Image (tube, rainbow over all chains, first blue to last red; front, side, top):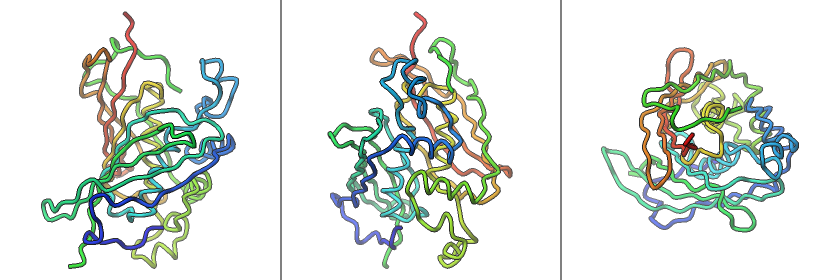
Length: 143
Length: 143
């Protein structure tokens, strides 16, 4: 859970605390399906996945995006988060371990808000990129 | 689950099939916590939420973003989805029912890809906006 954080304490180039998730088991796809209500069998039925030309089930992209979100909100309280965007770069397979890293790329005062922009990336244990993204947050000032 | 979809069948102004989720129960926050591993008590412990100045627990923002993603991938197969970005506009409270809608705002051929851009919005039963966003997909051609 995120501690309080202030604009003055953030510098361009600062690293976001790393978050490691996994190895992701097929059972987590099932849990995510139940939690989200997204029951596309591509995520839970290997036979179905193979029938549509995949090697087997893949994780919900939104689960991986959720990991990136969790990495962000473990550092920046949710209420300060304004924007979050991703590019889907690869599929996540069972037993992948996902590591989310990020760094601050910009900080600026704009329309009275103390804004930071960060780049984030989610990679598996082989360095294969699953998601790249960025987020913007408006932070409180110590002043 | 998304059916096959072709670039030629999509026009600017087309509506994305609507997705309705809810009413969201506190138990779904618990399920999402277990599925995602995001155990911030803000989502599951009313006492904790009140202690930090909230009225009570709120849903994980990533759960709501996941609903938007589910609305998208129920229409556009996941493998065609390239980018997805959101702006967090409001908190989701227990018993909110979330409706995701969207429409096509642009279509273009770019670097050999058949791209569509859509705007999406997630609102509760009172019309309060929780998330606005956009996505980009590269679609196959019938040609």
